[in-house]
Image 1 (cartoon, rainbow, N blue to C red):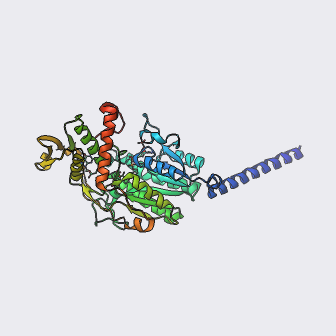
Image 2 (cartoon, helix red, strand yellow):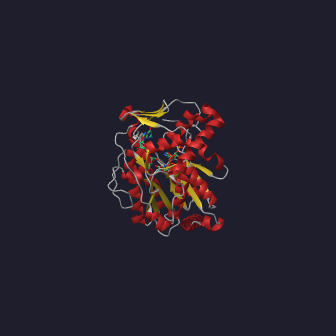
Length: 388
Ligand code: NAP
Ligand code: G4F
C-alpha cells in the first residue's frame, strides 16, 4: 500500500516537474518572440485600430509585411468604416485598454513584437464633459499596457501616441522635445501622464517605449467633429447646396497641421531604432482655423470675405453668409498656438512630412465632395462620424 502511495507521489512529482519545465520553455520562447523567427513576419498590435491613425498605420504595416492585429472594443454599432478595405488582412481582437485582463489575454495570445497604443478619447472638448473616463482611457490605459508588457514579455516594443496638446499654453515657440508642458484640458493632462509613464517604464525597466509627440494630423478619415473635417465637410455640403452655412468657434487658434498618412511612417521609424526615445512630429508650419476655412472655400471656387468682429463676425461668399461664429464651440481653456520643430525626427529618423497645407485642404475638400456626390447627404451622414 505504502509502495503504491510512493509510486503515485513520484508520478505526481514527475508530472509537476514536466509542467514546470513546459512553463519555463514557454516563457523562454516568449522572451525570444519565436513567431518572428518562425514565420519571418513581425507582429504589430494596434490599439485604436478603428480610428483615423489606426487605419493608416494598419495599411502601412501591412505594406511592410507585418501581421497586423487590431485591438478594438465592443461597440453597439459597426465602427469599421475606416478599415473596411483591410478587413480581410487584419486580424481583429476584442478588448479595452481600461480592462487589464483583456490586454493580458490578447498579448498572451498574439505575443506581438510591437504594440502601437493609439487608443484614446481623443476629442478635446469631450474631455471636459467626460474627464474621468478620459483619464481612465488615456492615462490608465497606457499603464495597463505597460504593466502587461513588463509582466508578460518586456521585449515587446511599445509606442505611445503622445500629443502636442501637452504644450498647451506654450512656453516657447517652436516646440521641441525639451519644451515644458502646460496642459490646458483634462485630455492634455491625461496624455501628459501617458507620456511620463512611458518614459518612466523605459528608464525603470529598460522597456523599449517611445513617445511620438505628434502635432495635429488630418485626412479624409478624420472624425467630423474635429475642426478641419468639420470645415471640409461643411464647405462641400454648402457647395452642393445641402447646407446654407456652418457655425465655428475660435478661428484665431493656430495649429501645425500635417497629413496622417505621413505621420504613421514616423511612428514606425521610431520603433525601428536601436534605442527608444521621445520625438516631436510636425511640419514646422502653422495656420489658423480662419485660413483653413478661407482655403477650403477657395478650393470650391467660392472665395469668402469676413465682416464684423467677435461673435458677430461672419464669412460671406458674395452676399451670402456661409460662416457664423458661435460661442458654443469655445473651450474653457484654449491652446492658441502650436508650431513644431521636428529637427530631431529629421536628423535621427530621417523623417520629413511630404504633404503641404494647401494639398491637405484640397485632399479633404475633394474627398468630401466626391463622397457626397456618390452617396448623397443621407447615406453619407449615416456614418457614425457625424458633425458636431
Ligand atoms: P481617433 O480617430 O479618435 O481614434 C481613437 C481610437 O481609440 C478609436 O479606434 C477608438 O475606438 C479607440 N478607443 C477609444 N477608447 C478605447 C478603449 N477604452 N479601448 C480601446 N480602444 C479605444 O484618434 P486618432 O486621430 O486616430 O488619434 C490616434 C491617437 O493619437 C490618439 O491616442 C490621439 O489622442 C493621438 N493623437 C492624435 C493626434 C491627431 O491630430 N490625430 C495628434 C496627437 C496625438 P472606437 O472606434 O470604439 O471609438
Ligand atoms: O480640431 P480640433 O478639435 O483639434 P485639437 O483640439 O487641436 O486636438 C486634436 O489635435 C491634438 C494634437 O495637438 C490631438 F492630441 C487631439 O487628440 C486632437 O486630434 O481643434 C483645433 C482648434 C482648437 O483651437 C479649437 O478651439 O480649432 C478650434 N475650433 C474652432 N472652432 C474648433 C471649432 N474645433 C472644433 N473641434 N470645432 C469647432 O467648431
